[in-house]
Image 1 (cartoon, rainbow, N blue to C red):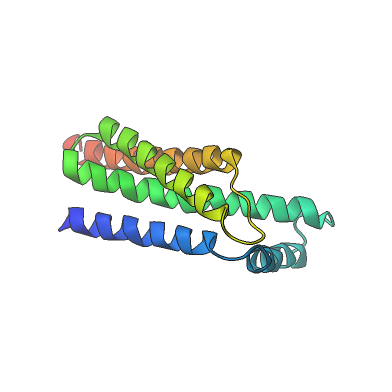
Image 2 (cartoon, rainbow, N blue to C red):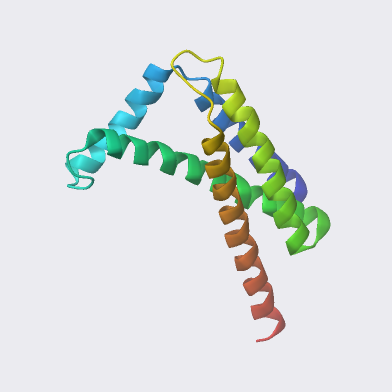
Length: 146
């Protein structure tokens, strides 16, 4: 039950990430531009649109992979029943997904694959996995030691 659920969620997030990577550069820029406009409308980010667009893009990378890392950690936790190994495997798998993700972008017009994004994506995944596993560990302690 849980294993299949987390597997399907992981595959769904990976499909979402890869679909975004297949967007041409112009579409990706328009999407980032919308969020830049929204932030500026709320009075955030100042007038440096280039810096704000960079921040929006990198934050999106980090958050997408934090979600993936969290779900992969849940998957491996359900399979192995061990927090540490689940976190390690989630990080390794997310790094592999990030590498494929950046490689995909090399063949998309207006996009580039960057090793720095693989590192950022992996950091996001490890952060997401660590947060989820910490919450699960604290939750388990709460019920064992009322």
